[in-house]
Length: 96
Image (cartoon, rainbow, N blue to C red):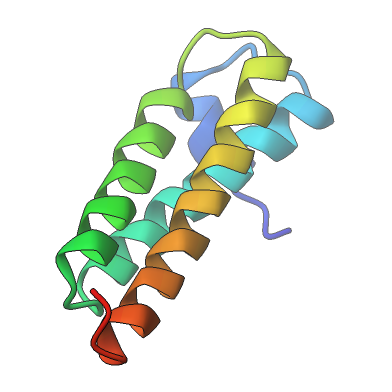
């Protein structure tokens, strides 16, 4: 994973290395990926899912929450991004 620890430490100076840092870095990536995805998809469902991923990642990346909550937020955001990708493909087939 790229070293995004600098960005995390700007807002969460006490962030522990290891699992907590990995989850926060993953949330930064998910937030950025979801933002980019929002500009590339056209179906309303895909846009809504990408927006939800972006907002959730942004809400948790610097939040004072336990590591297990960060882990869940990462999984949720990844699943939303994947769901947006799938929704876009379904819409291209005329089902959305």
